[in-house]
Image 1 (cartoon, one colour):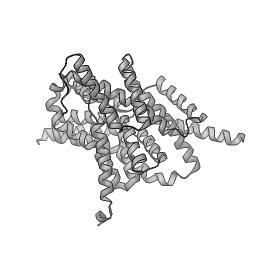
Image 2 (cartoon, one colour):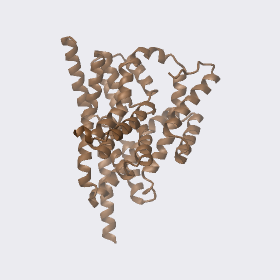
Image 3 (cartoon, one colour):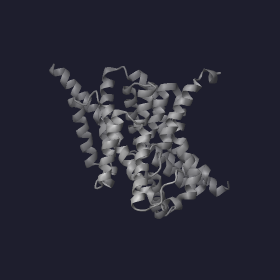
Image 4 (tube, one colour):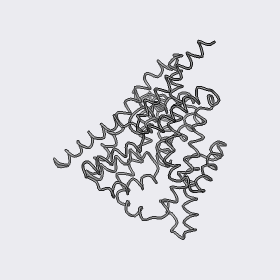
Length: 378
């Protein structure tokens, strides 16, 4: 690596480190900032190259903001730059999630802190629900979208089919059916160390790697899979702790999928945090620095991509709606939940650029106020 390439790598790492520390608002907000920087401000990447890559990355599993960061840096300065840029984007949020995991046990038993965390959780429900707006706006006029949303929600609620199978299955069905109707080509499926519970770490890594490799949509789409595995199947965490992890993930800058860091930490400490984080991001990183740049143009010419994305995205929406319900089913009939949900949703709908963490903190304060007011009236 020559001097200019090293300098460019350092510049990219510094940019993504800053973005990872300040980039609130979810994956689409992060990508918008990347586009402004690389296309409008520095003109290092053309609008066509950026938008083309983004369109195809949306059709792939894994966290899209992370993959876009890796793609842009790999495109400009090679594979090492892509790897370092991806790590830089994740590092601030990773450290914050470790801090949250360390301090969690000292706070979770406190009554008032618990009330605030519940308020955070109610606000996060509104954040997740509003995060589906992009999907609704893109597909709301298509009957297929609503049919699949309903079917996916029912299947996930009944737990008759695993979540990735629901998402990928509906994607393949749409690609094949619409491909046949339109006579298009069918898709091609392409010592301290001794004390560590390596079997647990490996199992957790596989769970997270499976989610990162096969779940389509934004980072939010991984939550149903992680909840099913961490809470229901393996009983590693309670639903309460999982929900708090999702809350912390929403409050940190950078990709929402950094939630996996907190979950891994609560299961197996720092080794668990590393294993879970690596599992989520390793395969998406591999995609971006190997085959993806080489087949970018070919993928753009495949008509079935959009059909597949319709089916997979519709299923993601249905599964996410049930996930939001399951995360809050113990509070779904309570007044505080709906007050905080409606207030949070309304604020974000009116002011979409407002940092999400402020709305979440407000939800906690509202819940605390309601609790005090109720206690004083008893």
